[in-house]
Length: 432
Ligand code: ADP
Image 1 (cartoon, rainbow, N blue to C red):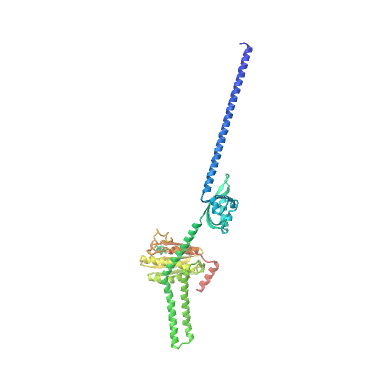
Image 2 (cartoon, protein in one colour):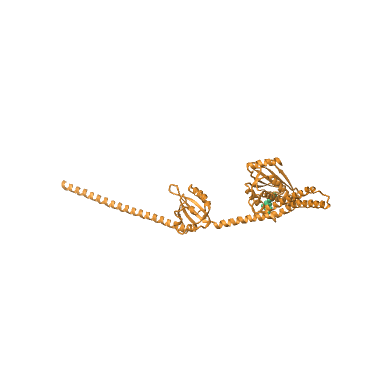
């Protein structure tokens, strides 16, 4: 082959190679492009699928929320209702979403609960999950009780942007609760009346003494008047005694009335030792009839306590009566009840009622204050529960203990009355 044709041949080969390379390159590029397009299409499809799924989820979530029988709502920090489901609209008596959406929730919160509501919202926006109850006055003026379970909703950065609340109408539940409470109060009153029945024996005895004395003095006066040898001034003394005894009898009657009347505790500065003495007197006959003796160990110079004397008498009376019953039932050979008063370690006073009876079974000691807990055949199981609620309504506490060798001890505390009343007690103490 000549040099010229060799060069041509080489040129052709080179050109062919370049062409082939160009063809291959463009084929590869087209392929890559198609692949890229395919990937893009795939991505778009994926993206669409994700969007569809998201939308589906949102529809599903909305459908759930819309058909949710409880009110579901979103609120902003200032109480603006952002969203609310149909159950929520019904709950607040809104005819259209615009009646409440975009408005403050306080439009349906009773004014006396607005502050409490605000405080709960503050807690939710501070990140807490909160359950709260409030009275609501709906857009149509209907009053009802609501319970809301509220949780904070956070954005991607973790900041709370809304409150998600599930609210339901608890009016019926509230009414039932109120009814149960009223029933309870009524029961307590009935129990007090039956305690009263037991106390009647003691009171009859209490009344008998002044009445007999009145009859005696009056008869004496009549005798002397009939005899005709009496100066009017000589009758003053016995007649004054008649008055004194009548006042004593009416005092006893006042106790009876106060005891059965329904009332709130009337707290005032009171002398606890005086209250204990009065109970000891009222229960004297009953304890004596059961062969029991009451010993008083009363600390002098105690501060005056913040108490309703009649109610505290009822507590001590219940405890003494329980001791007498326990000792009688157990046929305790020694039947002694000691009532002690003393400082309670703080500013208040402690009252202790200890007996020499069988004591309380360790397994039961935590239940004795429960309503209707009784180990007695004819027991009601209300005495200690009423006693505890009385002590607690005075801001005090009561507890029971049982000694290893038997004997039950009940201790309760009462708060001291204010500084002024304390000074009064000291003055009172000096004059005693
Ligand atoms: P009730 O007297 O009607 O049973 P209470 O509430 O007064 O109701 O008392 C509940 C129970 O506590 C009594 O049934 C008794 O078992 C127990 N209890 C109370 N006081 C004493 C006591 N001093 N000694 C032993 N047990 C007691």
